[in-house]
Length: 105
Image 1 (tube, rainbow, N blue to C red):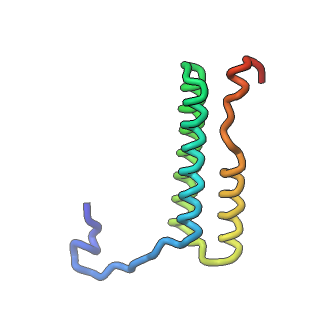
Image 2 (tube, rainbow, N blue to C red):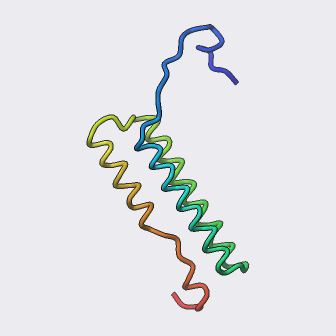
Image 3 (cartoon, rainbow, N blue to C red):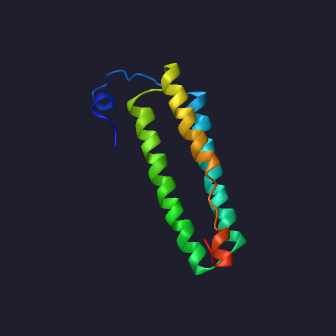
């Protein structure tokens, strides 16, 4: 569905995606590959449930970051540092289901 500006023939402002936003997307893709690795290492019902739960949380985080970068463009140093800090946290908290294989936490 087109916006009213496009329908009325008004020019639209073109906004380019920054390298930082592309890096941010790549981190979440890497996190998704970690989930598939965890599922392929131990494919059972408990691991499937854990991966689906983690995917839901990661999707929620991703949606929040997308909304944030659309609402406030990372065009200042402080905003870039905050986005990098969140991205670093997301990339270092690797999903782990190793405790499910041993039955202890």
